[in-house]
Length: 200
Image 1: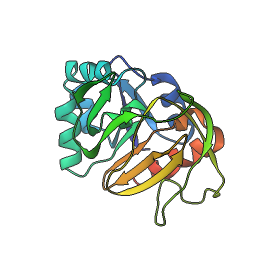
Image 2 (image 1 turned 45 degrees about the vertical axis):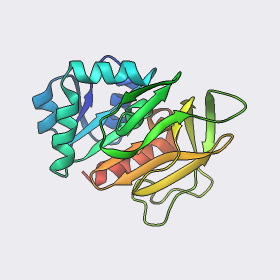
Image 3 (image 1 turned 90 degrees about the horizontal axis):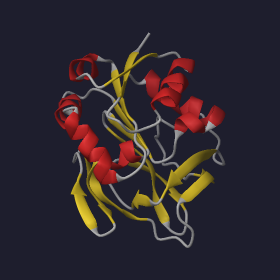
Image 4 (image 1 turned 45 degrees about the horizontal axis):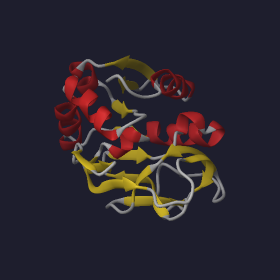
């Protein structure tokens, strides 16, 4: 059974992420402990709320070094929602730029849409060769809640649209990330988590 740590840094849907991963066969520990996060087969970085607050929480538990070490060693990391956003170079909220973890190239900026937040179910456009979305139908929907987004990055990029196109997910080596919440996305989210766990 794959051992997965869900990183507890004071933000995120920790228990629902834990339950969703356990349902697809992972042995899950929710902890802020850096040694456990380094030793696990895979690390999940959740996140809700403000970018700057999440970065503060991550720094308080020493997570930047932990995530950087895992990525350098090619060991799986999954970011969810703001946990995805903090993997990028920087985030801009209310005119203030905050440095991110810099694992993925790109900036998190306001979603240019008539209605924000983007909340609810939406379809995604998946690139060929995606592992995360393997076996899922083209019209599959996932659950989003966000007002900020990444507009471009490197790797296998899955897009969605709300007012404008944005990055809904990215797969780049050991790093996978979703702007939507797989743990709130029913069977589709479970299938995605199962696909991810199979790569661990």
